[in-house]
Figure: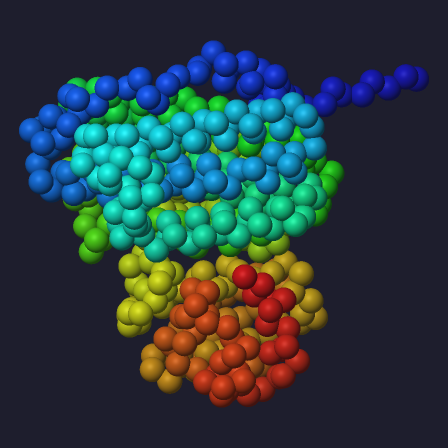
Length: 428
């Protein structure tokens, strides 16, 4: 009896080709030099309050710096792309990014009075406005470009595309573009900037589509590539709560334009999740420990990242981290969620953090699950004597646990075998 095979499941990316994306670029071509910012300069002074100008400049600075940075770092992506059609499209994207940088250079100087009309002076003037999280992401982009020049493999290209197209363009830039264009349209102000931002948004949508399609084409059946995607996300996600970090965490930088931390955060979370799912890389299918808490709704995931940032856990450091019960519960929930699925423990194990400057906590590991509990453990297989602030620096990526051991700032007792397994038990 003959059997029929079911047709392969269609993917969202199957309906577009690299040639389609190139054609859209030709049809959507525009000139950054033809925009007129005369009315924009008038609106900036007459229709924005001093605080609104301060808040808007903070957001525009992130875009200005970002457009220049991505234009500078795209060439190794072109070299690493395996198909000529992919290389051709990436070449158009580099042209787009250079045009965006020219657009922002002109707008910032002619309408806002920033810089002397050249790119370097404009960037120098807005440099102090960039947030720590923003700098972390773009410093990583610089390093990623160098890594891709040295290693053009498919997994490394997938790692790079995840950072560029999904984290920077889909998660950071796209929600910011929506915010800017929405209030410019509602107020009917700055027509030159508004027209340019509409063109930039259309370009970025095409870029994101390319990145999603490339990942959808390159990752099926390639576990090393899927691991690379997961590793890049695991590295970048902790920085995202610090990207839109206005001075003093003043939410008026958003609410003055009708937005909020929740609104832009939720849109960022949903954007990343949607693009990953379209690429066949849904969070829950990626290898390794949990990247984001999928049992939380998107707005709660956004709030979690911001809470960790405000508490001094994720971020630049230099502040005394919050150690109230709610913050510590949040921290240890993050720790227990980081349990590696391949931890290799043959039986239950309990690890206790005996803080010298805060209340103790312990984590009980049983098979694939971990439970975090406040207080001392009835029996701890491994006990870590360490300052809470030092351990927070480890979680925030500002300190190395091995160095704490070598300098005796962390003193273990109990199972040294369990201590040796810690990087495998909690791999992130």
